[in-house]
Structure formats: structure tokens, C-alpha cells
Amino acid sequence: MRQRLSLPLICLAAILMFASCESVKRFLSRDLEEEDYSLGELYVDEYVKEVPYVPTVSEEARRSGNVNALGIERGPDDNEELYNAIQTWMGTPYRYGGNDKNGVDCSGFVGHIYRKVYNINLHRVANDMQEDVTLISKSELREGDIVFFTNSKGRVSHVGIYLKDGLFVHSSTSRGVIISRLDDKYWSKHFYKGGRRQ
Image 1 (cartoon, rainbow, N blue to C red):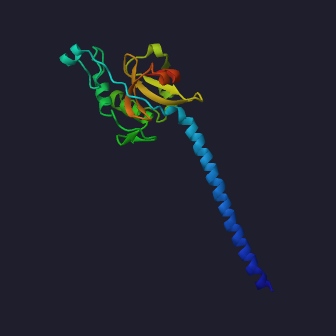
Image 2 (spheres, one colour):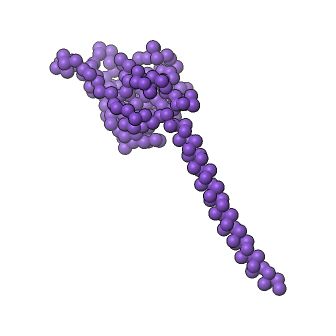
Image 3 (tube, rainbow, N blue to C red):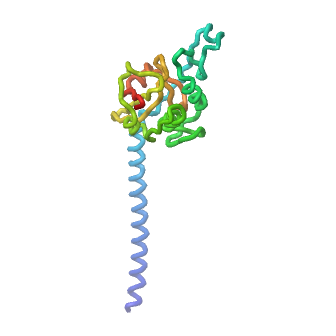
């Protein structure tokens, strides 16, 4: 009798175990979907469908070769090493978490340029880079300063490098490494602070 009773109990236990595993899987997958959504919400403002800024250079500057590696009219105080380092990354596609020329995110790009040009190691996450610099206002920006942008939740979620004349370079989610204008509607609205290396 004991053996006859144990076989149905084992079968019932197995059915309950498999049924509960399926329930756990459904619960976990729903939970993961919600978590992915939450993470996506954190960075949702970072996706900007934009047209890259194309510098306009005077004919005289073009004829005289007074144009730097990015096609921007050269000034007497321009850091050519900075512009040359940036040029090697132009057009690199955006990839979240990416850290090489196959795909790079905003903080990865800024980190590479800062290591190469200034021999400075920065935090890997955009928000944490604030710890590596002295925060400054937009009116104080100089070539090579980091520019910080917030998302709709007020968190710093994007960084770039200020060039000059209202231009900055960054790894855009829609275009990869490009030059944009600070007075662009989106970037102007989400600008937080500049950051100067210490």
C-alpha cells in the first residue's frame, strides 16, 4: 500500500514542481521586462535623432589651409592634438557600453579622448565623470571641457567634449561620433553643466 501511494505522490510532486517552474519563469520574464523598461526609461532622452552639424568655413580659410582635422576653421589657440584625436573617431557608430571603434557610447568616447590627449583617466559612467572635474557654467566653457546633459528625470545621462563657438563632439545614439551645436533645441534644453579637468 505504501508503494502504491508513493508513486502517485511522486507524480503529483513532479507536476507541481514543473508547473511552479513555469510560473516562476513567467514571473521572472515579466519582472525582467519591467526592469528593462525602467533601464530604458533612464536613457530614453539620450536617443536624439539628429542631423550632424556641418561646419561652414570661409573660402579664404579653405584656400589657405587654415582648417583643422574636423573641418573647423583653425584658431591660434586650438589644441591640434585634441582635434586630431577626435578625427580618428568621427563616424564611429554608437553602441551602449561600447568602448572601441566598432562602437562606442558617450562616456567611452570622452574617456578615450581624455586618456590620449590629456593623459587623464575618467570614470566610465557619464554621471560619475562629474567627480573628475570642476563643474562650470555654459558661459565659462573652453576647448576640451566636458559637457554634461540630463535626461527627463534630471539625471546626467550624456557627455561630450566642448570644442569652440558653441560646438561639441559626442557619441550620439542616432549618429555615432559627430559634432553638434549646444544651441540645438534638444541639447540646449538638456544641458546641465560643463566640467573642467582638475
